[in-house]
Image (cartoon, rainbow, N blue to C red; front, top):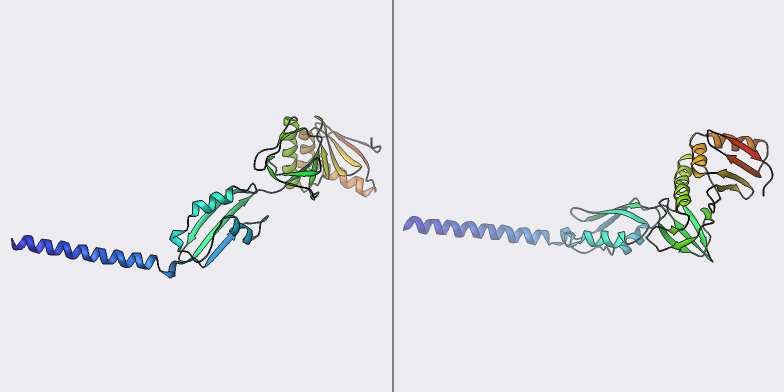
Length: 243
């Protein structure tokens, strides 16, 4: 009987110790020591730190363990410019938001507006102000909803032209405008200096450096108008007359 009483007392004592430790731990974790003091935003290019914090509805002052990181993430992912985002707690008082943003690659004129797309053809936004981006003209637009791929009748040519935009970034080649109304696209270096060929052939000439060499020779000779015909197997020809 005494042993049973002793065991019961020991059990109650252990329980009291566990409850006391638990209460102390809870009190510590919910104390102001773990209130959010800083919100760090990383890899933001298009939006400012303040804009990202506002879009994610993140705020200081709340307990860090009460921060719903998935809610912040979902709010930010609703924006077309944000491809992916990671929201992490950096104890004791910091929230870190790390972004993977989409970049503006081209603009598609439509009526009195411009549709801004990335190099995957995703619609990022619409604007009435002409941006300093490559213009893609000659498209028959079917759907242009923000956050969704631009849908056009010329799907095949657009796909090839989007790959051209990626190649432009890698090779530091700049086209002011690309007319993709036909299978043979016309890519404008200047208003009246044009490269003409399939997207595949133009890309190949950019990647192997032949287009850059050809343009350098034209610049050296002071030529800023004409049509550069680009074919397969590194074929180039030049017509100084612009249609």
